[in-house]
Image 1: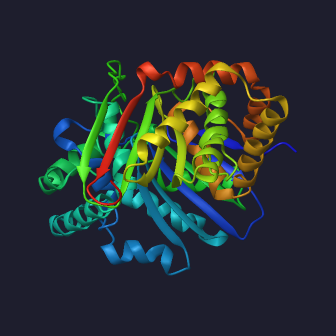
Image 2: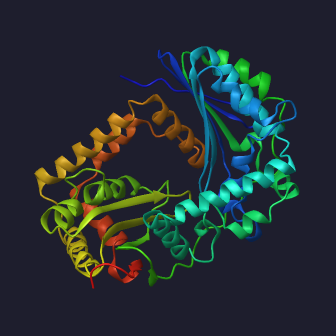
Length: 414
């Protein structure tokens, strides 16, 4: 059954996406094509800080009234910042879609960023930074990416540092917002019981008055990768390790093959190759996984594990053997078909969520100017061949271009 997707672009450049359904619950999202990679060196953490402070008051609402606008009708309001986008999203009952859209327009275009609220939020972000530093499994991923993309804005931590955040003032915030928050760099997406005509009417009421940006988004590509190996001593009982490499960007013709390879190797199934070998066969670790992150012009592939001090070299040896197998010979026919079916099943099940599908489509349209439907993704996975999987493994997991970061424990087994 063909999926219904309604798309429209306003005269001011704003893109509209609608996924009609018959659920009592609606999902509403506003994506902005700006993230931490678009910051200047002295702005590290500013995109994320602004995402926090959008809810601190507008020209017509105090902070409490912003937060209460959807919560008072049982809705849920949230936001996030990534390397390449900022997103505000909400879940509400169907009658309150317009309320959510009006609130989004208000906070994005009419936030006033009171100095007093900005100062309070600096401490909140500082606590968030401390929180992630208390989790070495999270911190090592950020540190690995920072080293992998060394010297480039895409490698900098999304949260920034305590020092950089403390320096921000209202002028910094307003300058960044005025530079980047324009309708031509936004997608408004809705999943719910609503027609395109009705959505268009709401958007004209709240978003059309905002003029199109005269500035163009310019992102400089990362072109100077140097493999690295680094070990950092720190307190704790486990060694944490990440190995990885540069990978395909979001529009690369082999991105689907790499996504399949990643899922087969270290996806979230207990039957992934790394889990079966490292955890189930040898009992070397509790947690091992791989990942593939595609950006608009580059990407990264990584493998992470945490293990008892003294066992990380043995674990790396098992990982290297599995990668070498993938580089030299394709999985057997039955094994390969199972990997395809497993990945297709996971994607299809995840897409049952209206929210998941809406967020994925909106992000694709924002960053790649195209939407790849679930049905198209399934077809692309089915079209991957065993030989293509081997070619991707050879290209992405080459030992001579591999990078590695280890958090070496000062405690535990020696």
